[in-house]
Amino acid sequence: MIVTNLDKCISEQEKGCNKKCMELCPTNAIKMIGGTAISCITCGKCAEVCPTNAILENEYGGYYVDRKKCVGCAICEKNCPIGIIKMVDEKESFSKTSKINDDRKSNILEHKSAVSSEKYPMGICVMCGLCTKACDHARIYFNPKELRTSKNEMLAKRYATIYRVLNANLNTNLKPNLKEVNNKINNKINGKVNNKNELNKESSKLKDEQRYSIIINSEKCINCNRCIYECPTNAIELFENLINNECINSNSMLINPLNKLNSKSEMVLSKKICTECNLCEEVCPTTPKSIYKGRIGEGCILCTSCIQNCPNNVLDIENFKIVNKGKSEEYSKNIENSNPEACNNNNNNNNNNKNTDYQTKIYCINCGACVDVCPNNALLYKDGRILYNKNNCTLCMECVKSCPQGIRRVINKDSKDLKSKLVGNCVLCEKCIQKCPEDAVEIVKREIPFEVIDESCIGCGTCAEICPNDSLTILINNLSLEDNTASDFKVLFDESCISCQKCGMYCPRDVLPNITGIKKTMDKEYSYIHTEYDYCVSCGLCNKICPNDCIDYGAIDLDKCELCSACANICPTNAIKTFRTWK
Image (cartoon, rainbow, N blue to C red; front, side, top):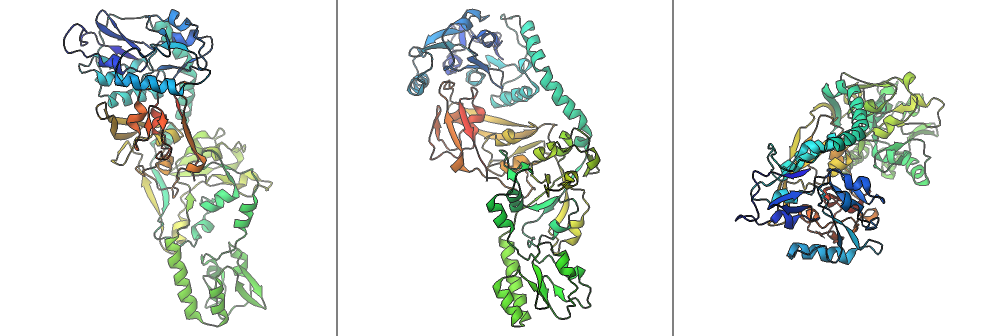
């Protein structure tokens, strides 16, 4: 909660106090008692007694009012232990004259819902923190000890950094008895914390191990896909094959292997293209070899070894000759004209084209997310490898759902032995490295970052929103009331990070590490953002955080908005709603 340090608070009778904290508070949650500013203690009694559940708690430990549900009964006012809640008429709620309050009043009245109550409670702290920034004499302090969950402890650090608030021993005459309230709250959240602790306990060894994974250099890759064909655990796959073979879930990379192919998928998969992986030459028994990268030469004995081993099924027999149906028409004409030099030139041109049009490959980076969620110990993280024991698997599909890359999947879903078709775990066998003709694959050691500081970061919070382990916190080191901006952002990672790099896949400014080969961009055509003004308290944090200056107390300029969700993630009343799809 936010409390007043009475030792440092300047009395309103003394010179120098501008009562800026009261002016900036969007909910009138600060009032003068004996010349000293006293604020809402966020005890939660108002939410507890509200008969319509119109008072809700946010993730910062503050409370806000849903004015559509509020019936103006004033029960919250009567039960407030410090008497700071007052029922107000919406037309008179901003009696203080200032430009800030004029903007807030016009905003709420202009956009209010037709069913919202004319009277609703004011004086409830939403924990926006504006008062802590406003006080020139360190009058008001943010106390992390009263926050509700382990996540909120990190959010407390975030706010302490945002507003440069120093931890201090509080000396206050206002000492409400919060012991009973805190006990109720602690009992309420113990279940959530214990569940998380149990999950972390099982994966503690995993977090202490060094992280190694393969990485594919897109500049060197010639798209022969040899790594895909050689991988014994199917831990590498073309991105287009994943999205066409199985469906993508709301997280955009979660594979549901039980869905059927659609017509578009079947059309894409029916295309036969020679990738020049050169498996045909390796299995050819003749000396010298009669085939090279799909090009058939002299001496073929029609043993059909190349046909049987071709991963793309582009080789066939016509008129007692091996033919490659996966080559271009120009290539086929050169073959018929017996012009091998032209074939080589055409082949080189194809390779050059491939370099400029890299086919995105998805591969396991050994983050261990699947190991963490497996309830039956069918997966084990050992020496940097993810090992799979099908005998322990119950096909619960939790590993499939948790995979940030979407590479953990079931192939051949019509098989009678689905456990054997649950694939996508990298065992670092290095076969892809050995067989790559261009040395485009290597194994790298991955460090779990402690913090990331980059001037390009806009503090949008997409990384924290998308993180499967809730491991990220965004620190805002500079939030200015004068020029109404926020800057100097820092991304912090806690001990629960498994370096899955999902944050890097979705980061709109590419400031976070990402070796996955995946880059997700927001699809604005199928996404939306809007403001629920019955929740909005016009605190103005959205104005400060927006990198494009396209929001004004909840009013959004959709033409300028990039749907980064910075406003939605900082909003203390969850008034800004976003729905984003990714491509």
